[in-house]
Image (cartoon, rainbow, N blue to C red; front, side, top):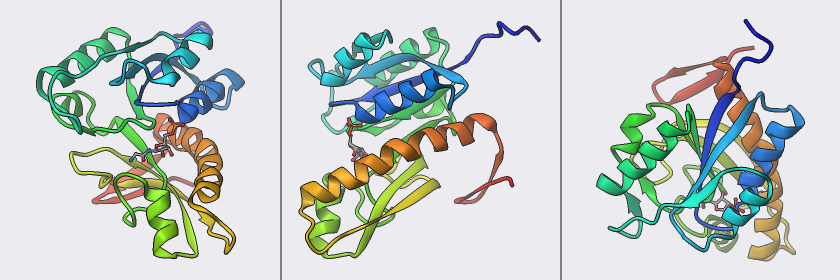
Length: 209
Ligand code: GAR
């Protein structure tokens, strides 16, 4: 094999500021991940993360869906498939992408779409997970990286990290503590999936020793 062998190519889908996207790009640049981010796509034309990606030298553009506000399906999803396939992407990472992904995108990347969520799933799926956890009064929360299926934050769990909820926390301070942990966790989970050193049995995803 050549030392110049092409790097594994990751696509990232965002809807907003893109801080998890930046942490993944940085992980590829630091060598933590032996891969490159080939393409960033957003369903929101003015997502601040698009400009951040471009500033980091990563191709990034919006593909704004024509139908539905909370899911990506049909012709809209096909436009994502076409762009990701054209970029040679093998793994798709949702990073604050605020739509439920449906076919044909799901079927085009079987077990190759990941998501990060700011709670310990299955607790607090959906929007504002950190605020849900804080309001509920749990003493621990955290973040989860999971495979994406066609449910809301319901796919098989790959890795989780626990974050304490402190008595003096606000929803905002808890969100910031969870986000810092997300930035550490997502590159680790992506590295595990790219390595192939895991097995899946039903819903259980286990890393090899
Ligand atoms: C992150 O906290 C991510 O876990 C969450 O949106 C935020 C995006 O921030 N995603 C979800 O809630 C998905 N259900 P970022 O754009 O700075 O990465």
